[in-house]
Image: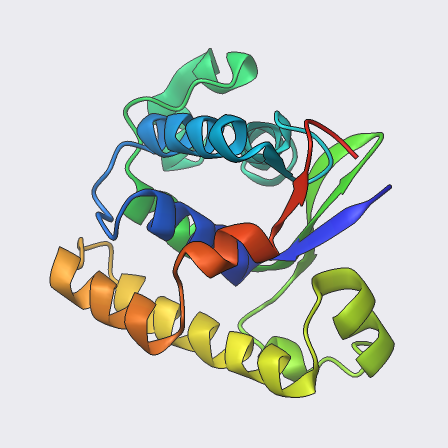
Length: 189
């Protein structure tokens, strides 16, 4: 069974797992995701390896070998290792996409956003909002506002302080409920 997650929800998951610490090493965020999934018998995507695989696909399919983050990471992404990258560095890159898809063929980032608000995409209808993301129109529009706030906070390459990140998280309900909303029971589905 396939699953889709909005890019701002992927960022939100990472921020929640990092406890609002945007300067956390991305590898530590992945380890927190692993711990959460095992402790709660849940998975993001369609299996417990999908979140890490999604980040691998970012380097394989979306960022060129000359992208500064790819150059710094080297070939470590091929093994699913992301040590040395900071969460704050990857957030703006993730927000360039509308969503991520998880299926039997793997994980990948979908629909480049090109700075447009996702709610303005006419192809998103009520059925797709509910069946793909689990949101009604009002919740979906709130997600668009959250994405805009994330873009403002993480632009410019500077690390927002933890207090600013926690304010963003509080204002947009980025908490443990998001982890449960964006995950499924068991080791795979």
